[in-house]
Each structure stands twice: as structure tokens, then as C-alpha cells.
Length: 86
Image 1 (cartoon, helix red, strand yellow):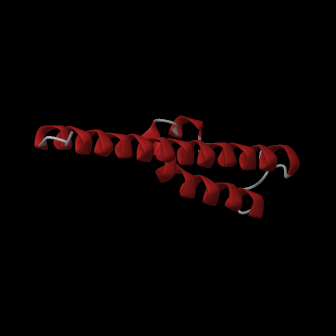
Image 2 (cartoon, helix red, strand yellow; image 1 turned 30 degrees about the vertical axis):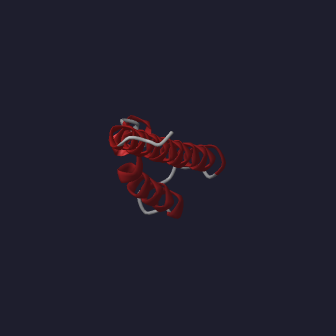
């Protein structure tokens, strides 16, 4: 029994939808990884490198700012940018 053109179109749409879903899942996982890494790094800077007591010109502050600037556009569209330290 062969596939009808209609069934073929349905199968193609299902495959396309599955591909889009897989891409969204991969993107979501990447965003979660970026956020987790950012939070881990900032926690380390706060707890182990005295970020809280640092001055604007201190290297630890500059590292924190660079991490925030890099991370923000990568996670902002996921609605998680409220977790960034400004």
C-alpha cells in the first residue's frame, strides 16, 4: 500500500514540526546552561573574590561586568535577565 500525496504532506509537516520542537528544546537547554554558568561564576566572584567590596576599577568588578554584558543578550529573550547582576 503506497502513500497518498495527502499523507506525504502530513508526514512532511509532522517532520517539520518535530524538527522545530527539537531546535527549541536545544535552544532552551543552551539558555539554561548559560544562565547556570553565569550564576555560578558570579557566586564565585561574590564569595571568593570579594566582588561586593570591590571598587569600579578593580579587576574582579571588570570581570563581573564583562560576564554580565556577554550573558545578557544570550538569555534576555528567555525572560531570565532579571537574574543578572547589574
